[in-house]
Image (cartoon, rainbow, N blue to C red; front, side):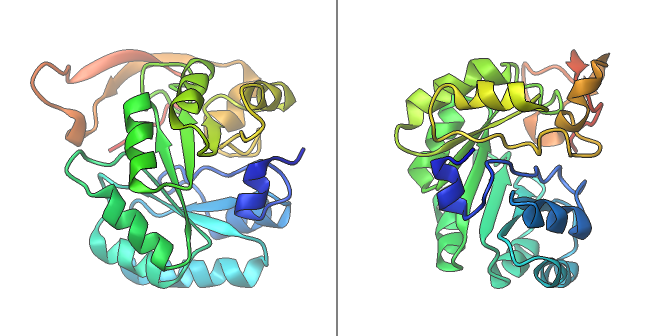
Length: 245
């Protein structure tokens, strides 16, 4: 399967490894890129001095394109600077605070020669990223870990596709096999699954084929707390049980 996203990101297959905060590794990123997808290294908690070493190790292990990913509410400027100085092919980000300037950040990434990918769980956040200059929007439903929003992937996906117009959209959350890939591609030929189709350890997509689903109490990450927001919520943690923050 070849889609416009493949041409944009210079990959053979429309499959991308999620950054999973810091749940990926240099060998996993290289393996996905070598297989024709886009490997992505999660750098949410990686120290700035380690980042150029990890990116250098990826370049030694693969000739394919790859990305780096930041959860922006956790990100520190020295870490972002270190990543952009290494000029990764793709700069991926998610979960920006309302006071963070996405346009300035995306501009810096473009100056570094990186394509910009941004994850959004709602139409307003997707439009915010489009206005800031994102090259690709990732529409992520609540199946992507259970902590990214209230709407399911296949419900929010066409809404974001319609809202952002010509900007390519990728789907995330609960995509684990060919049926999920086909469903993600249905709204428009520009789509691709964000998750690595069942090949992602410790992720919701990597385990979606098992049929297991646990319910539990989940804390809100600190930046999302505020007047009127509950300190905890009960939600299906399908299927990873991972919590942010």
